[in-house]
Length: 119
Image (tube, rainbow, N blue to C red; front, side):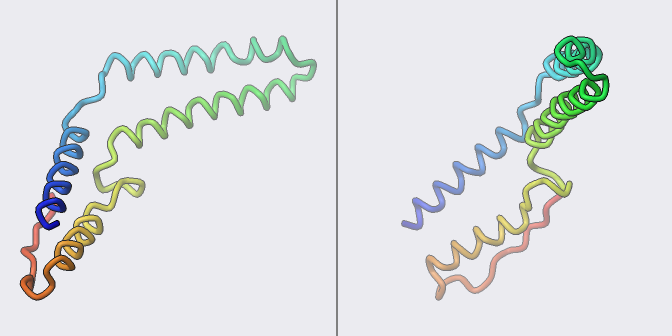
């Protein structure tokens, strides 16, 4: 059981390292930004064709452009979940939970854990 837990931890660590070290393709990010700008420029003309009111058209344009840009910002946050930002994963608490899980396997043998400082 101990070896299984350690094996799962090593596998999870390797997968997290793979996510951290794999860069997001720069041309793809630039293309997404270009498409969002093109959408923001063309949306008012397209939406006004389908509505009779300028106010409704403005509101629909604002909401649709805001939704598209918001999805892009969420994708940027999900692209790099490790760090010190507010929405990033709390690695210190995850590490502490893992150490407590290890200690629960053999509580009598483990007195203390070495402290590892995150960069």
